[in-house]
Image (cartoon, rainbow, N blue to C red; front, side):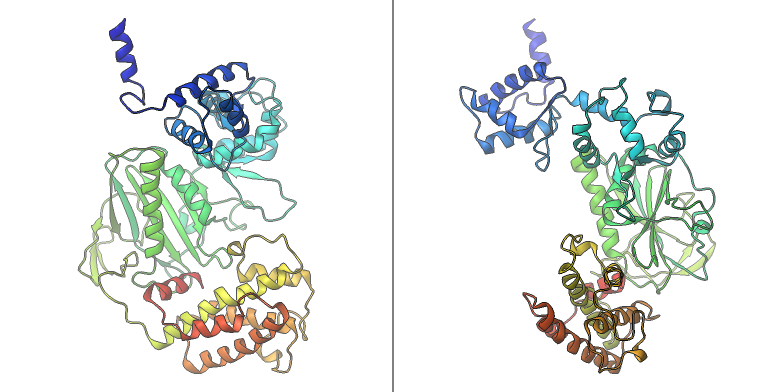
Length: 520
């Protein structure tokens, strides 16, 4: 019996580790409390109260350490930003998840006939509608029955575990819904390039950046989709080709909008056995060396985080390769290693042809870029537009709409549209004018809003990343005058004209040039 107990103890995660006696007392108290609860959920305040009744109470730091430690060993579920929702029984949470996300044949009756279409959306396209959620919480046959008070907390936990992804709402009247990557069964009905009307004539395609695994954990791709969805919007298919509102989320293939407002740059994420691959579709600009290094770094970092922190798998490794981007990567042939030595051309085994090599995923550490004066002009003007002028529109709008989204979520397209909808500051010649219809003598706030729009449009619609000295100086003169007027009208903490002068005086780095080129 003694040997059996020793062998059993060795299987415990805390075997042969220093473990505070207070933690053992707290564990026993929570085990007793769990037996009394109808559902194993407590708040941090309730657990603190239990601790005060122990012979040696835990102080605040010790209690948080206790909760974080037991979360790590999966004895309970605790997140700092959800202090009122601590789950003492991980199996109960797993069962709760299964009520929401489960195979169709195991799903309990959730008003099947009334919501047949929306259930099909979940089981095929991975779209979870709020009506389906409400039906689940009203179903007497599952453990979530009459637990509406915990619905938001459960959904928050599912979001933290990357099981569901909140879908962006187009309007305040639209009901909440979620993407569930692990439930997606539908595959692209045709070639993904064809679905987005992409041809070699209207689009530049990057090479494929390939993450080659000896073993690819099955659900790693779902976590990566969730990570990318927090940063980029999932693209929608052309309404003339597919039914309205269908998103480009398929089994093994997802397309993201890197430019939410213009939709001129897209990211394709694809998987095949033991490979994750990404490609950029550039619908406006020429692809240059190092242009997508930030995207490559972000995806790489997210994959490493998922493997090390979420899966805790130290034995999962991957290598980064690249391959020709002219065709979809149905096979893993034609892989190439990244080289410190810069190459200009390469022979593609798949196309049986020689292609130009741009090295767009490069981190630029090997060789400095040759940046022209015109490119520096464009970069500085881009920084003024993206930062200072966007801040002006945001600060002005916030005077009338205090509940605006965070500034980081508001680009000039959104802010200009909101100003037009507000219609507080009407331009002298109404909205949507041109440079020719706004004389220098028109200095109303609405006129300056139009000047900001026209400056942004001039950069965004430019076919080249160049701005000659004459036009650069003209725009600086226009912007300098309008910022003086906004300094007087808005009275910002940091004057806009001071920020303009700082930007004009600074020296732009290569990274800033590439960053602006990617954002504009």
